[in-house]
Length: 210
Length: 100
Image (cartoon, rainbow over all chains, first blue to last red; front, side, top):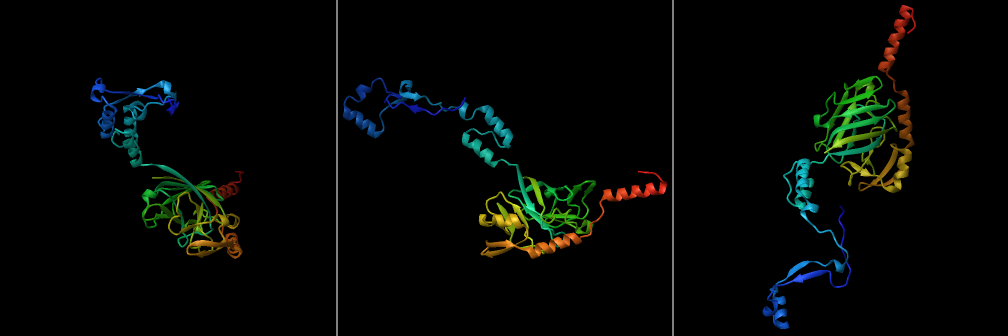
């Protein structure tokens, strides 16, 4: 059921008030009534809505339509946080939960290769797996940055193309904040194809980041 | 937005990428909209003018591009594994007098 906004008819009768049964004996004069009202001691109930005073009756807020027990338990399971008891706590649980993102980007190769010409790509989050696709050999590159350090190491990314699947000569490292990936290739005469950096070639990048 | 590294590579090209974040990461600068068409036409070989880390001019760098294209053409193409396998098959076919 969708939530409906209320629309008052503007006829001056949208709500009821109710007071104590001895109201008249407590406030026999208008002056007594006003004094109690000003002092904040006038006893009343807001006694519900009068449908006749509304063009559209609003959906009443309740536990059922704000945060019921089933939804609260589901949020706890999904976020790994404790079961929220309020809407605010539920929103806070989502804000505190780990969020996995899929980042996509692209770059144009510059034609350089080898240890003196490392390539790099930055992400807004911390990448955990990175795929690069493109080049004259239609190659796919796979990086697992969580296994990298801030120093270059061999066998650090896979180059897969045609009948080739290779990691030798493929060096990579990550930045100290883990959000930038650096790599270069020394195999096959520092092939720029294996470095995913052929001149003028557009490369597509997909990464799972946290 | 497209961003480029502030420092050109050894061949004069600018490392670059598309960036979905708000501010470019350290070492990079956003390409202003007014230069986007120049970048798209000549990337990654452009000559860029910077003022206080902001791109103020961008033009083609044909010298660097031509040099890179000549280097690409001169690069020795190494045989692929498929090429090597085919050569082995051809050798065996010749030695055994069969067609493979």
